[in-house]
Image (cartoon, rainbow, N blue to C red; front, side, top):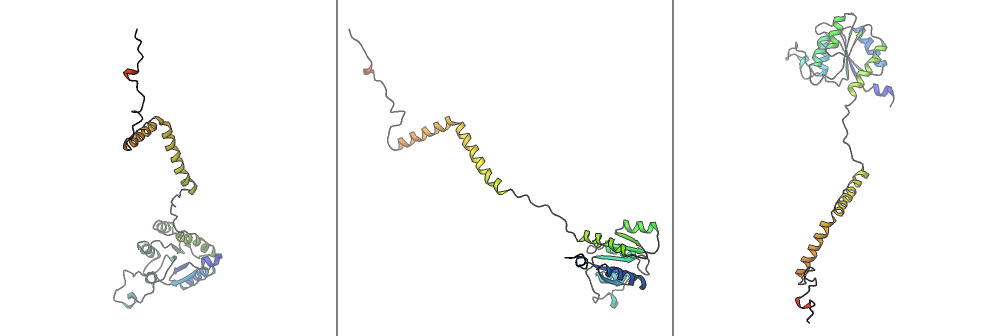
Length: 223
């Protein structure tokens, strides 16, 4: 798979009320092989994402079930827009349980450090100064791949087959060694089992068959 094929899978939603800026960002994204959808307001972006603007009337046609929901991998939005600013859109996206993992990039023609820091602290991945350049589009790839990459999960440790076969043999050798070390107990138990078996068959046990000397067998010399 080529780099172009890989990047073309990513879908970027571009939000800007300026037609010129919107066309520029669309051209840059397409030249970078991204799929692009453009809208001119934050409220329309929310409709495409499946969220309704809080200021919309629920009975209006625009807030009915006719709105289209799209699968978006990244949102790039202008900061200064009428109605809903880019910062407001950022807060709505990050406040949604289903959309909070979508990377959001803010654009602005005004270099205001306090504004930039506030957007970055509240979840924006980047803050681009207009006019946006092609080099800025290359920065988007790292955020897209970071969200696309699955989290690695620990793999269970599998014991090698040779070790599994070796362990029972070792345990068997240890058991044999213990029996050999305690030979007296083994011999005693063996003799008891033999004696019990002979008694069941009606044979005298080894202990009763030992020769005994009678009184008459003693040697006496009479004079």
